[in-house]
Structure formats: C-alpha cells, structure tokens
Image 1 (spheres, helix red, strand yellow):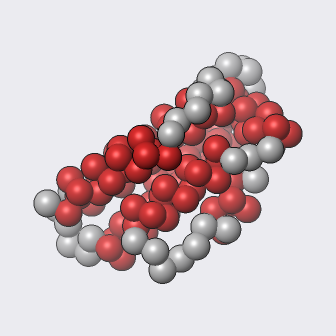
Image 2: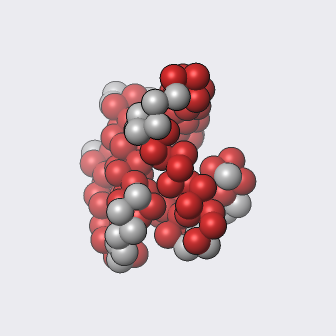
Length: 125
C-alpha cells in the first residue's frame, strides 16, 4: 500500500510539498485502507509479536531511510547534515502518520505544513 501511495505523489514539486502530499494521502485513506495500515503499524511497533514480519519491516524501514536520503541529496547536494536531516524528516512523518492512523487524530493541514516546512527551513540553513 505504501509503495502505491508513494508512486502517486507528484514529482517536480518543492520537497516540502512532496512530503506534505504524502501525509495528506494517509489522512484521506478510506476506512478499509486505514485498517490495513493500522495493522501494519501495530506490527511495526512490535504490538503483534511476529519476529519474522518485524524483521522484514525493519529492512523496509532501512530502505525508506536510504530512499529519503537519496531524495534529499537531489535537493541538498553537499549539505553537512544530510543524513541527520533526512532521518529527522522521516521521524516527523512517521509520528504524524501514527497519530492519524493509530490514534484517529485529525491533524489540520496547516499544522502538518508548519511542522514539515520548519524542518525543511532548518535543512536550508
């Protein structure tokens, strides 16, 4: 599901907008897709106790960090904090998505933008 969602994110936008769109997609999932996503998050967070699935999810998570770092390299070529910045953004995204999916929080778009855009402003410094 996440691969399908990520492929639907428009390209050519400013980096901040790309990540905002990704969070907004998850906010707008239908109830069935949110339930599937919620189950995956519970396994990822270790609630379900399936070591084999958790290992696969950890591998996927590592790939996600590498993918994010590659995206950041296109925008912040020789940034001294590229690795840390990409990890911070991934953690912000994960936290927001967990709030939206696991806790059924309604995070206003403006708040999502503020937090993401702040992280990207820090990266530009």
